[in-house]
Structure formats: C-alpha cells, structure tokens
Length: 407
Ligand code: CTP
Image (cartoon, rainbow, N blue to C red; front, side, top):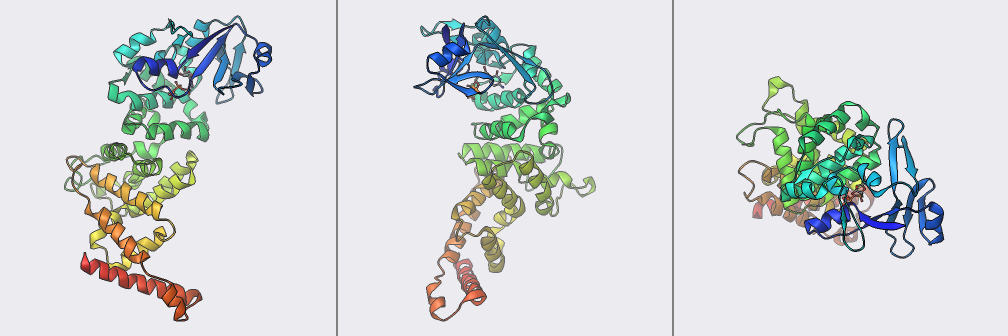
C-alpha cells in the first residue's frame, strides 16, 4: 500500500500556512489490511480509518458517485485498484486535489499548484456537483484566502450557480451548513463568504432574508454607504477586523433583516425595523440550528441595537429596562457582546469606520452602576419576595439617575 498526504495539509504547506490537521489517502489497500494494522474504522460503511496512535484520518482511495438527491445519496467505490488520480479527481478544488508522499514528492494531475500561483479557486471536474455543500466550502475558502488575492474561477462560479438553481442546496442538512457558515464567519474576511454566495445566487436560496437587503436604501445622513446589504457586509468586515467571537459575527449578519421588509414607499426610512426583523432572525436561526448563544444574541441585537446607539439619550428608566432585559447581573458577557455588535454596526458605515463609539463605555458604566446596588442592606430592612425585587429595581434606578447626571 502507498500512503499520501492529501487535501488541506498539502495546500497549506505550499501556501506557507500552518498545517493543523492532516488527511491521508491510502492506495492499494483493503479494509481488512487496515484493520490488521490496528486502524480504527470511522463509520460502518465508510472507507475511512483513524490511525491507532496519531488519530489522523486515513481514507482508502475511492471513487464517489452520487446516486440520489440530498445527503446520503452517495455510493462509494473503494478498492485496491482505485488509483491516486481517480481519488483526486472527485475532490472539490484543484488546490485541494494534490497529494504528497513521504519524500514531499507532489502528485498534481489537475494543476493545483498552477491555480495556487494564479490565486484561483477552481473545481477539479464535473464531479464537483456531487456534493452541494461545496458551494459553501468554496465561498468559505474565498473568505479565508481573499487576503492572499484568491478569487473563484468564473467556470466554478457558474457551476455553483447551477447547483443553486437545481434545488440541491435545500437538501443540505442544517448541521453541515452551519459547520461551513460558522467556520466562514470566523475567517479573516467573512464578508467575502456572503459576497460569493450572493454572486452565484446561493444566498437567495440559503438566506433570502440577507439577500433581500441588497438594493434597499437607508438614509444617507446616517449611512453614507446607503445600501443595506453593503452595510451588512461592512459590519461583518469590522467584526472580523476587531476579532469578535462567532456570536457577535452572527448577530452582525442578522441585525438589520427587518429593513428588507420595509415597503418601498417608506424608503429610505425603516420605522420599527428592529422589531419587524425578529421573526426573520428567528427563521434563519432555526433553519441552520445555530447554537443557543448565537440565536439569543442575534435576537437581542436585532431588537435593541438602536437602543445601543442612542445609549447616551436614554432615560434612566429605559436604560434600566435594557439592563434588566439583558440580565446583566447574571450574564455580563452577553451584554459585552451586545455592546460589541452595536459598535461594529456603527463602524460598518462608509467613512465612519474609525469614529469613536462613546456609547460602549457609557453602557458598561451603566451596567456597573446598576450592578453596584447591594442587596444585603435591603434584606436587612426586611424586604422579601416580590417587594425585594421592586426595592432592588428602585435602588438601581436611583443609581442610574446618578450615573447619568455625572456622565
Ligand atoms: N473534500 C471534498 N469535498 C468535500 C469535503 C472535502 O472534495 N465536500 C476533500 C478536499 O480534497 C479536501 C479534503 O477532502 O481538501 C479534506 O477535507 P477537509 O478536511 O474538510 O478540508 P481541508 O481542505 O483540509 O480544509 P480546512 O483547512 O478547511 O480543514
């Protein structure tokens, strides 16, 4: 049997990037031989094994044929006769279809190295279409390598468009899609992920609510970039520049969905878009089964981002309601993430990226003021049950009034 390093490890070594996990392909071996060497099978009928010591993935060279619609509609053919070239041709991108032996000799029948140099994400063969998840993968790689100058080859974009139109994207499971989406959002240029999906028509299928924001104007005085879709991409870009966590990036992507619902006669104003957007945010959250913290923050940011921007003008009672709603006493981290998302929203405006955002510190100060109210003295005064709750609220309101006067 011959063993080769394949996929991302070869690509990233050639790009001079750190290699984290290594995938291997084994040519000329049978399942029985692998088991005899101590490899552990990953799935019952999937020719992939884990190395007994390193735990890395070793796959038998295989050809893959799609036999039906959706995930699961695959048939595999793995046998010792399948060649390395046959295994590589069914892979997604030429830059992912190179193999390397233990002497670092490269096998590159589909010119991955040439495309690495040309900075092109190009599919290997029509077999690309066998897995519609690849539409999201290509967009994710575009987001990751945009800084190096990579773009999607026109013929690959065309194939992605056809996949989007075929209805295959709808068949992807929430789990597989979310894995790609969440990884893409954590790349250096997550806005490129959305741009590429939009360019090939997949955004309309996957997140029509986000797609609908393009072409929707906002008032120029607040939003020099005008277009809501362009704004959303800039907010995401800022979130990545400021190294925000996934929760914040997800909330940034969804914060303005309500603007897509505004009747054209009301443009460029978007009255109550915060509230109107909630049902759309909920729908996208659920479509991809986003983790609870992402779902929760997206909804809160959707509903309250304008409160964030107006923080300095809010009455103490409104400020208190906001802090109570966020439960800042028990969930300080979530409130920090809300503030961050608001700040990214403000910075995601053309020409205003570097403007200071005093609202952030003001909100932090308000949360501290409300938190500083001690419960013990109220207990000592004999308050309990709902009355204690009311007394704490009164004290917090007092603290916020004092805070606002001083600020
Ligand atoms: N692959 C593919 N189609 C998929 C998933 C994977 O063709 N839908 C192939 C590609 O050759 C890829 C390899 O399997 O390079 C390994 O896949 P994976 O580990 O998911 O991706 P990497 O390319 O290693 O990229 P990353 O750095 O994002 O993990």
